[in-house]
Image 1 (cartoon, rainbow, N blue to C red):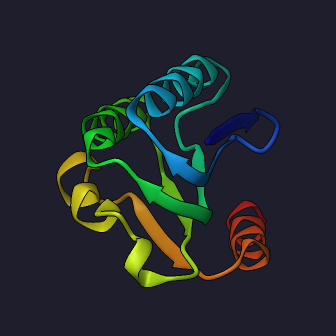
Image 2: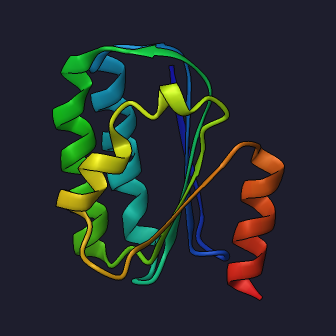
Length: 124
C-alpha cells in the first residue's frame, strides 16, 4: 500500500509505504506523487517512510527509478528516508546514486520522529 501527500507550504512531498507493495499500487502512488509535484518549488524535500513496509515486488523498481528522475528534474534538494530495518532499504541507496544529481542530500533515519526533526532542521 502507498499513501502520498504534499505540503506545499513546507515544500514537502511525503510517501508512506506499508504492507506489501505491488507494481500496480506503485504506479498509482507515484502517478499521484507526480501530480502533486506541480504544487512544489525547486528545492523541495521528500519524506519517504518505509517503516510499515513488509515487502515490495521487484517489478516496482522501474517506477521508483522514474519517480527519482522526475524528482531530480523538478529540483529535489533533500530526501529523508525512514527505514527502521536496514535490510528493508530495497535498493534505494544504490538507485539514488544513478537517479539523483550530485548535491541532493539523502538522510536515512530510524523513526518518523527523527525524520520530522531532520525536516524541521532543514526548514529552520
